Image (cartoon, rainbow, N blue to C red):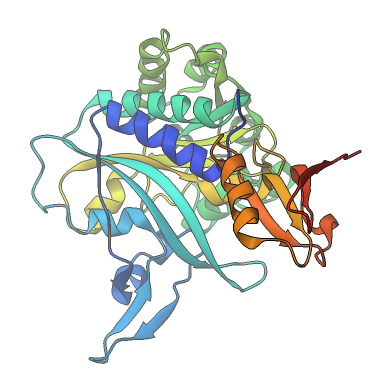
Length: 376
């Protein structure tokens, strides 16, 4: 079988689009620009925390779109939806790199499930996330956490507001030393400190961790979170990927925006998460919406950076032609090769052949003869 000529990003888009549409999702196309106030009012929800701004001809401050979810949610009716909006997008976002402060254009594809409260939305989102990862990498894991469980435990030990934020940051960083320092400075007793330290280091297959999670519950919030995780595991038992579903409470988010499930997906060969998502009912409330929502996005740009094309050659045939050859005959030779499905490039003999990486090299002589050049 001939290797694919598409980039990892293009292959992922084709596969994921087919998956999403097969599940009844319809494509949405948010605009390229947004009113800057949308981002200013939801700064903590943004991955980079910054937006690239400019003035339009009427003097309004606009921003290049830095988050697709915000653009979708702003157009959802304020009143509760009676049926789900199941949307997917293929889009670009514009961000400022926190490391280099350079502007970046990032490609994404993702889904949003927005509608009435339903336990199925959690299950459907995680099932789609697992299948999405399987389509872009054979070796993958999906790490899942639950903010209800984390916040329930933190509430039970009465941490002050400043300590809550620092404790969540330490859990996210998997820094037990930093977490211990925060808890000690907050006067947390040894028993409660141990619970949070155990939580920060916890990681394992979801189905194997449910019993331990149940034993840690101290309030209704935590019990409800574990029940959701149990229902999720049971419902996905037949999907074939439950062994790729892991608990990891370093997957956290801003409690003003997120609630319930949060998740991140990884594939072999890419050091960063390629998929991230979660439940964001709190964001809808902040924006005056009564519906419920969960979704995820796949960072396509990461695939192109860290994964090579499945085709290692630039093209199938390179024809190096001599000066003085018959150009009409040269084009006929190119057409003859390309009609078999090959990608054929023409270059003069003055070109440096080492610049290219073709499958085969040919020379077209002044006598209008096409000769294959042996390659090492």
